[in-house]
Amino acid sequence: MSGTTHTPAAAEDESDAVPSESSIGHVSVGGVSVGAREPSQIHPDHTQITPAYVCALNGPTQDFLCPVTANVYNIEFVAFKVRDCDTNQEIFSIAKPPAEESGSTSTEADASTEPVRSIRYKFPADFLGKRNIGTTLHFTVGSEAITNFQLMERHYFRNTLLKSFDFTLPFCIPHTVNEWEAMYELPELSEALRNDIIAHPYETKSDSFYFVEDRLIMHNKAEYKYQ
Image 1: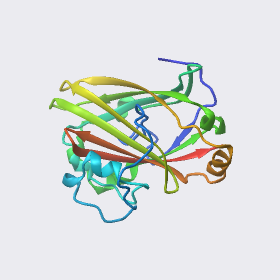
Image 2: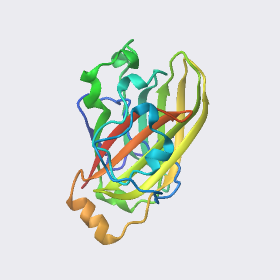
Image 3: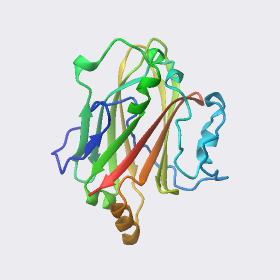
């Protein structure tokens, strides 16, 4: 779904392309965590990280909770768009140029690819007052079918959870390009909190966790500036 460009946001990362770590909004499941866990640099091995563990986090993680090699399904994000569902205006859009789509797989990645798992976004300040946002993600899948592809995204201002989103795609066919559209409701923020977020750029952060049948395969991070 295309819309008229409206104060486009900017993304800052080392690659200037859509990394497989783009921040994604999903259907809301509320912002209350159960059995909250303090942020820590010590976490279980990624094979032991479950959706329930992620739900217990009450702050952004300091490290990635899985290596890039955990993406054994060779999922690659190639385009991402954010729009205001109430006005259908496009807020942000980015796509990987075809020339940058190499034949390497995620399992061939090494530590040098770690920095592109983080991305910084600049959004207009009025984004914080929007209520209904839609995202469209295009991604490719490798040689294996994917069942129960779950995306869990948690947004924080400092160590306060603003909202948690959860969405599951039941099935992806091997060797396909997939379009995933999600619509979600942003939390209503007080004027004081909005002003605090604007005054402290990049202290609003998100962790995006990607599971296949409850196994963590990808973890991406984002930071946000509103101006």
